[in-house]
Amino acid sequence: SLRFVLTGSYDEIFGEQGQLSRRSGVTVTFNQEKGSPLALYFGEETTDGPGQQRRSAQRYWMRYDLKPTARRSFGFFVGNTSYSGVGGGADAGLNLRFDYLLRY
Image (cartoon, rainbow, N blue to C red; front, side):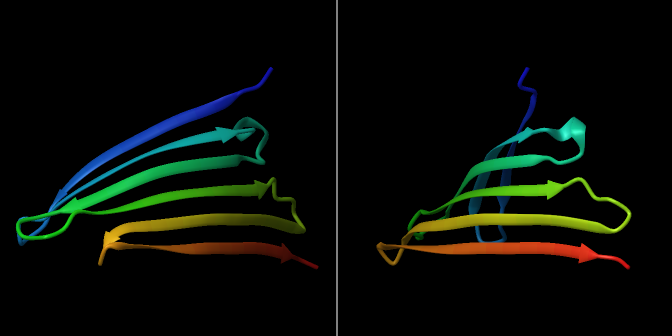
């Protein structure tokens, strides 16, 4: 049977100059009980304030961590953040991370 853990989050942040940011996201984690989890995330953040254009960012990522042994560990992360509403255009950034440790 397929087992997974579903988690979610929501935050509202009030800034000093009347800015309001709303952040929400959902994470689905597979294989957590076996020690080699695969996690998938999608989230969105919107920010607006008095006299400002609304900005938004969509984030999504995937992370995998192989169950570590006494001699090695391995993990990787791939994610992207896309921005819209900044100067009328859109922008994006890709993140990659690989971790490998070998002990001898």
